[in-house]
Amino acid sequence: HFLSFFFFFFSSRRRHTRYISVTGVQTCALPILYACLADDMGLGKTIQILGFFQSLKNMNKKNQMLTPALVIVPTSILSNWKNEFIKFAPLLTFHCHHGSNRVKSKRMLSKILKSNDVLITTYGTIANDINLLNKVNWQIVVIDEAQTIKNHNSGIFKSLIQLKSRMKIALTGTPVENTLNELWSIFYFLLPGYLGTQPSFQDKFTKPIMNNADDNRMKLLKRLTKPFLLRRSKSDKTI
Image 1 (tube, rainbow, N blue to C red):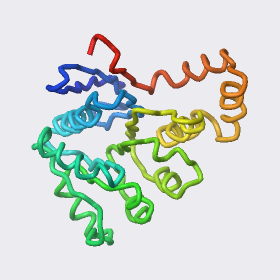
Image 2 (cartoon, rainbow, N blue to C red):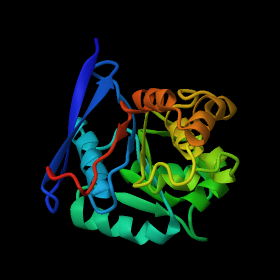
Image 3 (cartoon, helix red, strand yellow):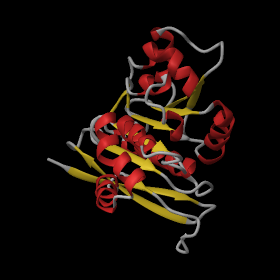
């Protein structure tokens, strides 16, 4: 039978709460979740994800992740993520897969994943090691600064869509920086095909909205993305 799981995300510094409904296939099955968390910068997206990871770990009777989580970040904020893990999620174990000393074999990677809840890596490393990392059935894949994958022709984008996971979350304060095609790239990572092919999306949404300010197409796009797009602004007085 089908269940709905409600996960509680929290940040003690921001004093806000968030609930996400996740549909599970069966009582013993992993939940399925695809979401773009697009809160403004500074509203605690990283801490919310750490809370979510801990919830996934707590759900298992063995108090461990059923399969590891993968977090992909720009190199410039890799240290920030490691510090946040240590400060806000001390019960989660993690390994940093980055640098010249990182493991290169499937056997060594399997050994690391058995003793850690989360593997943290960078976009550049994903592009280089995709033939290793796409062999893993990740419990969840999270990408931070998701606007990094806005170019659907890039090697990073083509590598990311090869990753296997029942749950994917994209974190970004700016889901659209210059063109709506960037939004398509993020959603293709989350749900391939949901917004159509890149050329069809451009014809159906990008051109009518950006060239002709087509209000009907804008409303349709908002209706399609709203169930997966979670966004709060700093100007929100309820925060």
